[in-house]
Image (cartoon, rainbow, N blue to C red; front, top):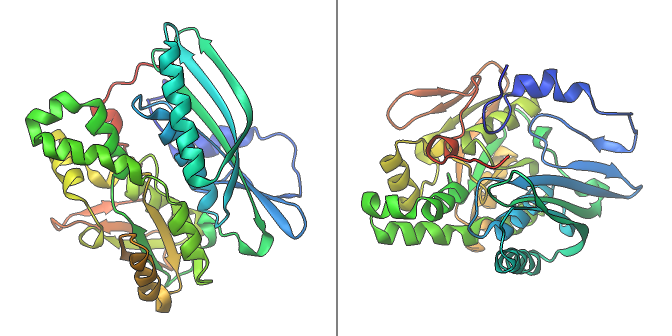
Length: 338
């Protein structure tokens, strides 16, 4: 069986990847599991949150993207990211100036978040056509403070920050700039590029969890908002009903997705955070986030029946989240790196 580009199907992760995880350790409070963003390691009254992520689908500002994406997964635990270990694999023929651009972006992202680079590895690698960055981010916090993706409860409301396809819109605006200028116009493309400055969810994650009413959080990444909702429901062993007309879809995202004939709900979406909260506190948390300048909306709720996982679309159709969902970025950009 030949594997397709992109995130592995959940069935393969369950049946193959999770079969080979080494020895058990009772200090691992949260380990590999569907939808869980970062490992949690018990240190007594404190915990470490640890997450690794590669970036393979972008070239422009790859350093900025890589650091923010990995830090987001730690922050979605309600834990402040602190340390970064970096692996940088460069393609043959990479220029010294390219390396310096990447490192400058990494430094900028670390200073924005408050991260310290503690080590890693850098090399030029045979067979690569694009740079690949793998970031491991570690955060430290009180054991009582962290949340899981699978902590949602029936009746919880779901809040989505910033909207659909934030990261994907920026990547497409850079990678397909010349094509999109003709399809949607220069203003939309330039505006789409600027969304790259909004892919961190550290601020909203820490703000939301500080309310004490958050039951679960999940960082929107590959597969977009739809996959994020699917994974939170699966991890919580619950069903979900969400509504497309309640989701923020920025003009840039809507126009670019329409022009490329792709679905914004399944477009890689770092910069958005899915938050499950006690239903009576959802509106106040949205207000708190909005007061901080973070666009947010209540998009649905978790329900008792795990067999019902749907998004009700604006056009009246139903998106069944029990099915495998397809990341849209891979439909319009050909990635050739190994």
